[in-house]
Length: 137
Image 1 (cartoon, helix red, strand yellow):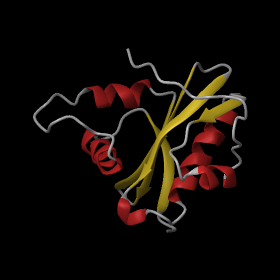
Image 2: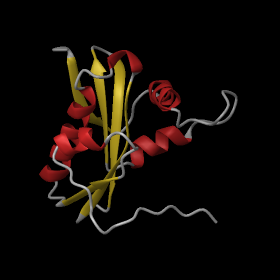
Image 3: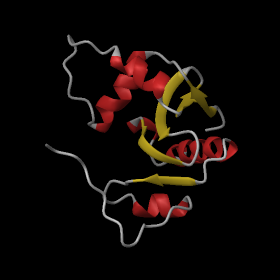
Image 4: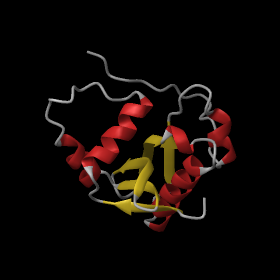
């Protein structure tokens, strides 16, 4: 695990990111469809962090933000071969440090069911009295 490093990027090989999205079950496009929007996601994300084992991308996470007051962490995933080894935590810690270094004081996220303890161990707390919503019209 000593070879695993996290870094923030503004561009990265599209196929690496698509593979992680697919493994997480978040990818619905067919292979013959245009995937160029992935480049825009990486470039346009306030903090896009990757975890690498040597030159292999094995994890990612990102934070969207106005760059002034708050940020939301999303799309955190680690390649199946590398899960349960602390890499997800490394990614979150890297993103949080980047945000704090940029004076972002409010950092939130919505976790998938079952991940509560993972995020609590990293310093996140449940936002009592708040309910997440998604626009569906």
